[in-house]
Image 1 (cartoon, one colour):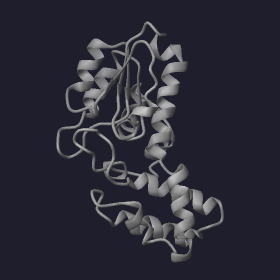
Image 2 (tube, helix red, strand yellow):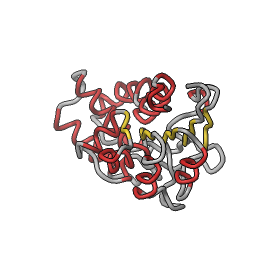
Image 3 (tube, helix red, strand yellow):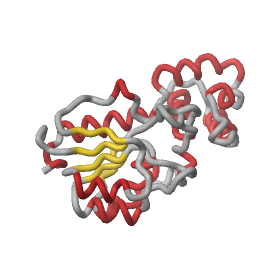
Image 4 (cartoon, helix red, strand yellow):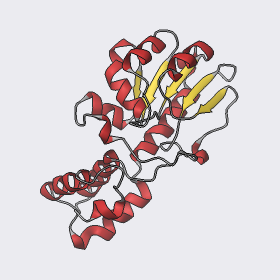
Length: 212
């Protein structure tokens, strides 16, 4: 598999320290319109993790559909999860919890994964709704939040515009006496987009069939 050329479109969901150096792997900035089509011509497989939102044209479902008919393609974490949910019946392989949530209609819309991104370093400056949902789920699973408190936390955090949402603003909608505990979960293990992005890279590295 190391002789295969793999394009990995990554930004805030996959920080530099998670970008495993593998012969044939090329890490590209978040995908915009036309990038997936170009990658399908130049590479043997595509991993779509991050794409642009709002300030530029994103890769369309039609573009991704055409690409996955040419080369193996997987989607995860952010724009990749969204496009995988739209195109999985036609060959775009979904990876990770966020893609499953989209497919099962637990979540809907790009606002769930959208973040404000630094224009140069491509790192996230705000917190996506999916990470809030994941932390709320972890807190409920561990007995910190009731179902009602969990729902209120998610709803309140989602009411904050995605370009302004931080953990501080999100936690204002959690019970005051539990905010420190929930913050600890968020800081330690709450980045679901990152978990899914790392899973996608591990999968493409370990599964030669995806690059055959």
